[in-house]
Image (cartoon, rainbow, N blue to C red; front, side, top):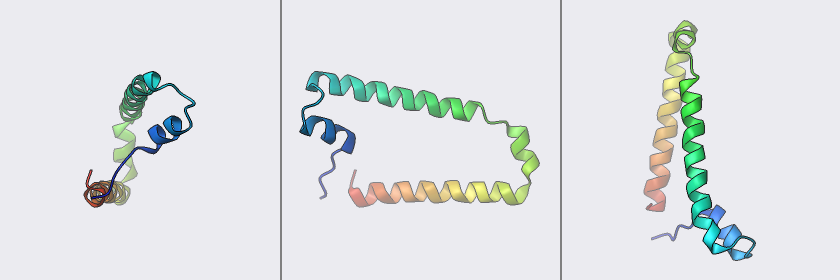
Length: 81
């Protein structure tokens, strides 16, 4: 099994620039801000303008999303996370 350790955590703790007490809350805040920003992107999408793009563009977008999903699942499977 491959040992997995997030790079963002490893870099800050290995050189002791940030105290360990601060690392966990900072990671939680980072995750929360990422969720909020992704929600903001999703909520600002205008579905009418997407519908006007046409079938070819919509299929291309769906195919690219499917490929991203499969790539993500593949990496999870390969890394054993």
